[in-house]
Image (cartoon, rainbow, N blue to C red; front, side):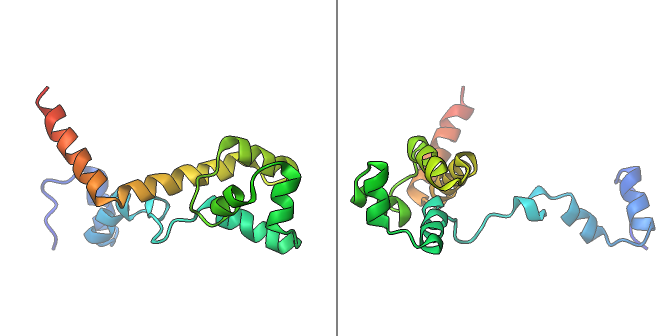
Length: 135
């Protein structure tokens, strides 16, 4: 029988109901919840827009010219080498009917994931946290 001494009553009911205590721990660990998992390869919004253009048979060069931006900057954004700006997201919404807000949220998520994977930046954050702990 499992020890039930130092756990809360709802946890005791959970275990008594036949659920494994390890399942309970997984369910209460925010990092183990599917909605909190981070993708192995983050998706840049340019990939989504590139697929949309290809699906519609629209040339990148022609589209960039029609909306008044340079082809090279547009192509870099589509290939994930440049960030999607709010202005360009709004232009894409006007031209293609693709909502700007989810595209910008995707860009933000992409930027955050890339920053978290930058070891030198993360080391800098650790140093800042150590210094801040002294205040």
